Image 1 (cartoon, rainbow over the protein chains, first blue to last red):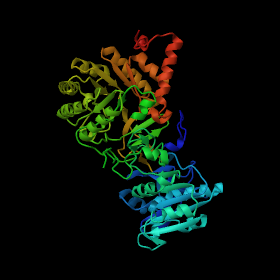
Image 2 (image 1 turned 135 degrees about the vertical axis):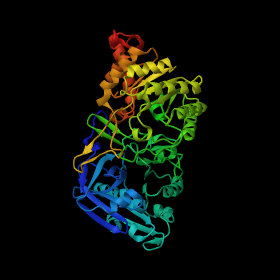
Image 3 (image 1 turned 45 degrees about the vertical axis):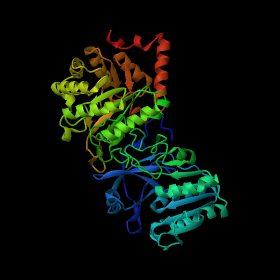
Image 4 (image 1 turned 180 degrees about the horizontal axis):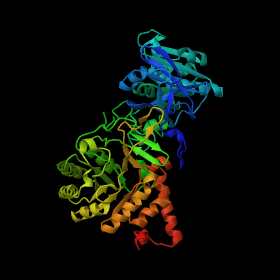
Length: 267
Length: 276
């Protein structure tokens, strides 16, 4: 993303009516808005609920000229989003950050609602004609959103903590075998940070390049406030991320450890 | 901070911090508009203890000077934060007495009052030892030239001019609500450059101590205006949004080019030149 010298109109606050809502299961919904700006897989938007708060979200798909944002009820902000109705207006600014680069023979590893950015990645890989395999895990079956879409797009392995879908266990359990059997040459991961730590540990010795889609508390989204700087590298996650490559991740000393909260403290 | 140095920054200023950590205001806290940016971050900071560690860590890794920006909720807190900040041995302490976003909790900015400003400068100087002290002023209050004079008389070593302007407000016309969670916020970016240039000009007219000119500097010609008005150093924040982190290199190159083209041997020859 090159913004040198020019102000992008889509950085300015603008609200859009919710066009459609899809409920995946208890507390997991996708919201659809008219697509007003370009967005690539891994980039994010800031979603503003007037009077409540504004938070960064990955876009999970671009479908029929609509942007899809998938949300799991977690804190006060996402719980507020759950009660929004079609026609209610939310602010959308973006797209922000650097997304995924596209590669053939890839493995997409997703955990929980973190699967969201992999869905738009799968769309882009499919459009390129690239082959990819999905490995998706969550606590329970309904938290694996868009499971059937992933299955249609490529070979898909599932894991759940309770065994309600796919194999009982974690995505990392059979990771090595899947990489070997499927002849994987590139890895993408999105999900909780603890998953990244484990995935990194397993794939580092295999010499396969990879990209992780990371999360941090963000304030400005435009690279000036320093809130989302990653220790060890100074990477501003909102500009140089949220998708980071293996080389960048190697510099980060805080992966899976404490990082900055809203005050900037490491917690 | 390490990264802005790679791109040519001559010094770095921390975000302002005080004794206890603050979460600041909810988002949206920073919103661009067509001519600048509106922010009400609310002085979020990890607090004194954490910041001392951060500055120490920085100093272990970098040689470029660091300016610790501090504030307090009371005159006494300014003294205490200064005393403790000295443990980290920053190259300069900048005292923010002019944040426009914290009215309800802090009352009017201290920098709007000559007696308060005098007391803060005295207490900070008392605790700062050999570390030079810059006072960060806003364009409001009884007149920036007057306040700058008060700072100089009470021992300040430099003036930083200016803080954000305002506060201002932006309203979303569809939901008909103010955009910032704090409703209002300080204005920065290109929109405030003329206010900043005028403020530096006023300060230069009134004091002999050096001026760190900040406010709306995005292009080399903006920086040159600030130098002509009397700035010794230039501060850049919002411009990172417009120009990327390369802005520091672009400004340095642009200033050098100007000096070369006009046949000047050093920046000193144009500092304050607009006053003659």
